[in-house]
Amino acid sequence: MNVYVRKQNIFWQKVAAGIGVICALILFLNLFNSQIRNSFYVVTAPLSNALMRLGANGSSTTSSLFNVASLKNANLILQQQNQDLLNKVASLQDSVKTNQAVAAAADNTKNDGFVLVSTKPIGLDLQQDVATIDKGSADGVAINMPVISQEKIVYGKVTKVYSNFSEVQLISAKTSVTDVKIQIDDPTAAAINGAIKGSGGLGIYLDLVAADAKINQNDVLVTSGLDGIYPRDLLVGRIDSWNKNDVKPFQTAKVSSFSDIKNAENLFVVVNYKRQK
Amino acid sequence: MMRQILKYTTTVLLFFLCAITQVSLLPYVSIMGVAPNLLFVVFFATLFFQKKQDIVFSFFVVTLAGFLLDMITPLPFGVSIVMLLMMYGMYRWLTRFLREADANIMLWYYLATFLGLFFAYDILLYLASRLVGSPVSLGASTLIALAYSVVLAAAVFFVCQQLFGKAAENNQLKLL
Figure 1 (cartoon, each protein chain N blue to C red):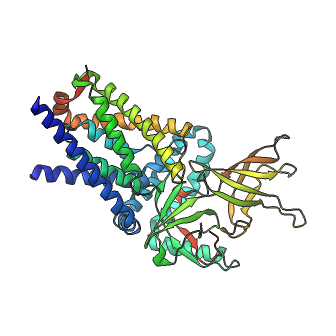
Figure 2 (figure 1 turned 120 degrees about the vertical axis):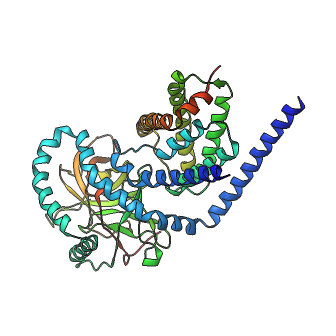
Figure 3 (figure 1 turned 180 degrees about the horizontal axis):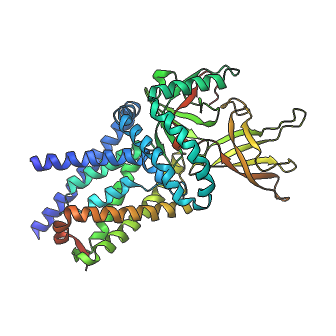
């Protein structure tokens, strides 16, 4: 009996000691949060980057398994494009590609006067739609700066910044709301505004469109600039279908996002746009 | 002593590799925007395939896995560590009623325990993420993640069985 009690005591002493150590560790981790996360990203970035490229190369094969219906059509177009691209990719080094992206982005944004910082995504948390990029405060990145692609497609905004890395909340995150408008060719027509909300899992939808507004399939959505986070006229997505209900004051719509974080090799942080907390 | 150093070093490397894979490679094999939780799968398998319940090593694994889960999500440090500590407590509580094992039921016992703990973990994660203002989804995506992770857990089970099979069969737990 005494032996049993002693064994039990030792067990609970170990448990208490373990919990104590863990509490101290949690305190330590939170005190040096930025430094620890930054060091982790510095150490893991090369491997993480390599695995992301590997995943991007293999994703076309995987995704085709789940999209058999559209495979034929897509395949015909892609085969031709792919051959061209493969030839280009094989002949270009990574730095050359980055330079090209920078040049394309500079060309696309020359009228906007953006100052861009080129970056690469090195991690993706699908549970919360947060991407990690390889630029941080040392490169001039700050919280709430918009992140776009070279084609001026909006990806998200910076939500956490470390010395050499940052976390980007994608527009598909559940807590993300982005003010948008429907791109209209007719300059005399009234603007149709709405809000792009994230539905998680890299999905987005359009909400808060006035009930009397006329929405069409394939309408292109661009940022309106009203939220103070994103500059106006960045590409967001295309309307797939919409839901108009006379009872509800607003219309909603399914939207195909232009952003493709899984295959994005280069992104750009707009560092000179006004920011609002 | 050398065996212990090797054991802890291997565990650290394995979990680091899993964490990096989870944020870099697994998003490309997602189904309906959901990727499996490799770190949790490996965490559970490590507890399950321990030859004997080594509490110091278990606490080490809890801390390491929790730290890495916190690292790859925007949650503050400590959230995942505390949740995995609770999962470990639940695991110990579940295995109180179990004894030496029959290899035939081991997979089913393993999967049932995994399902229970993973579901509890998802609910706790949802509650914790709401508290810190960075909510994760709970719904269809949770079920997909559950199903996907169970498949991965089964694969990890067979790998572990090949690696530690004979020893584990002789030391595993079973229902009374």
